[in-house]
Image (cartoon, rainbow over all chains, first blue to last red; front, side):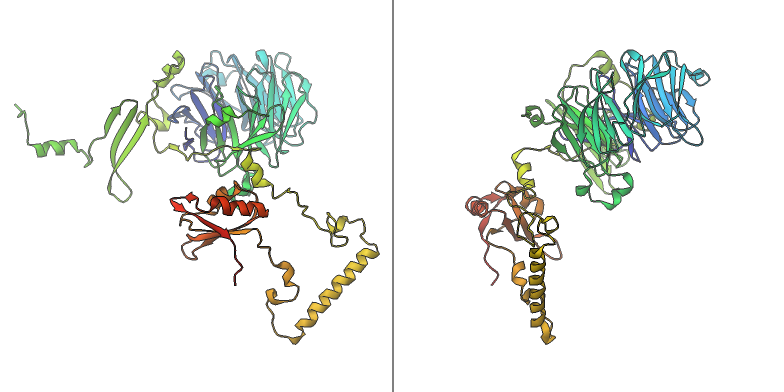
Length: 326
Length: 260
């Protein structure tokens, strides 16, 4: 099938995510309207209008009922996925960089930027009976991050922990009940972590870092298992749900884009073998760095969102499934 | 009472509300063809026919229910089905497998059997800066020879007349080796470097490629020169590609002849 090009955004894409079944694809960008698409035919279902700043992150819950977004307008918003209306809008003291629902969808976590004299903080809220009063309620947990800013975040197994990636390359696990750091990776990455994505079973996750590598970590001990090296900053990485494959997306910094040709820019999605750490395929498409990647939950297609403002949904052709790694 | 039948001319007018015929949908087995009429930017009436393949899938109830949701936000006004403003079908892009034959060929001129470095001091397989004889008498000697040749070249130019670089003594060393070059002719106008690369990289690694283009239009003039890395590959190209059909034309491939 030919790739679909989704042109719903006016500025660069910041994050894309599939829902659990993979029938919906959510995209957020530096313009103010996150979009939702039917992944099968690329039809746009709607836009979530209400933010007044760049939307940095989004997440959809297990049942695809609620969407959480965090934006540069210093709010995090909960949305009704079906109608595109705001359920709750929570004001923060600086812009919201990451936001995620827990696996069960009972809780949500979001983190704020270290900016305007504010420290980076991680908040956890209860979203079971979320309504407009949520903005007045105190978060169930609040963890100040003194050392460095959170740049990516994932919930650990059983909604008990939160894994955070920081702008100094650190990764840490926080116990949600104690509000304490339980595991620290030390210095595995030399530069900030742009993205973290869990494997399908949640036992491992892959990080994408500015230090030109992506790494595979054990989700419990934070032991670095594998390293995938490239020669450009990696903005996003995802693990295939059906094969031992990892896809990496990146490119040079956005500010250098205009001075480099597409050929030299290395804007391809790069496919690595999960275990052998060897690159086996590349796929072109974007004419800017890729900012976010996501595998369809069935593993037969994947989507990428780029600095060029497009989301591309690419189905794998038969050669991908026949290609057996020797 | 209204008359039951009006004149046929009126009927047509009634259908064309804004001067455009209504859109039509034809379902033909597994295919759906939608015909729409609209005005383009120049104000001309255009007809757009879109064909879809209808696929039937069995999905979970939740997914099926989500298909029936009404659109909202900026998509509120959209018709059912993808809106061509926001959803486009891009050109097919094939995965480039690394380790496949094509990929290796494309990259082996970088790490081929021939060492790239040649030492100026001892003629070894390394760069001069890394030469073990650097700074020894051998090095100094070679520098002296170089200086002597430079002086000799300078002498011939003493007459003061301009000598173009290719006529100068010592320019011979720069002459390229045409022994592995082939000329490909009867190429089509639409040929590009990429197409040519696609065509010849199957045969073997090449070092240089020149596609003759019309100065003004940039279209291919119909011939190209390819320098292969190995003479056997060049021989194979002459053998295989000569008489090969490409883009509805029969290629002619021969050994490249010197210019004069």
